[in-house]
Length: 218
Image (cartoon, rainbow, N blue to C red; front, side, top):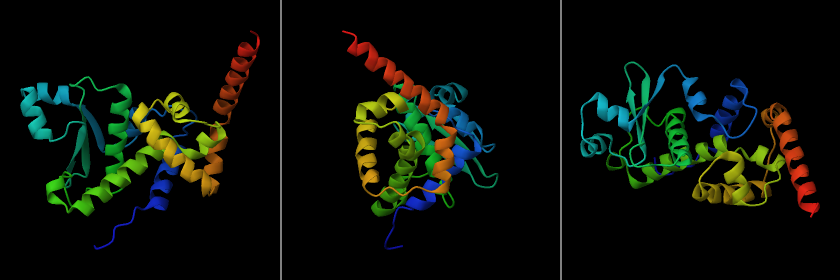
C-alpha cells in the first residue's frame, strides 16, 4: 500500500456507536467501563503482569516492549489483553489515554494480521499511520468535539478540566478542535449524542452561571 489515509469517517462512526450503545451521558468518559463492555478484551496492569509471571521490572518492560502500554492479540480465540504501565507513577490521565489508544488499535483492526504492533515489523509509514488512527480515535472518544462545542470550550485548559486529560493531550485536542470548528459536519448520530448529554450540559451551564454570579458579587 503506497498511500495510507486516516479513515476519519470510519473512526467517527466507531466512536459514535460506542457513545450510543453504551448510552454515554457525560464527561469524563469512563474508559474502563467502555473496554469492559467488550467480552473479548481484558485489561492487565504491568504490575499485575510482573507478579503473575514472577518477573523483575526490567524483565517486564523487555517483554511488553513499551513504556506506556501495549496489546496482545490471540488470533485463534479472537481475544485481546491490553497492558498498561502503572509502575512508573504514570498519571491517571496518562493511563486513560494509553488504554483508549490501545482500544483504538483494536477497533481499527490494526491487529488483523499481527499479534502485536512492533515498529520494527512495519514500514515507518505503516507505523505512523496506525499510531495516527489510534490517536484520532482516542481524541474523539475522550473529548468528542460535538460536546466540546456545546460546552463552549475556550482553551485547552477547559478540555483538561471537562475531559480529565493531561495538559499535553488537552493542547493537542484543542488544536484539533479548532480545526474541526472550521469544517464541522453534524450527523444524525451526533444529534443523538448531544441529546443524551443534555442533562450534563444543563448542569455545566448552571455551574458556570453560579460561578459568574459569585465572581460578580465582589
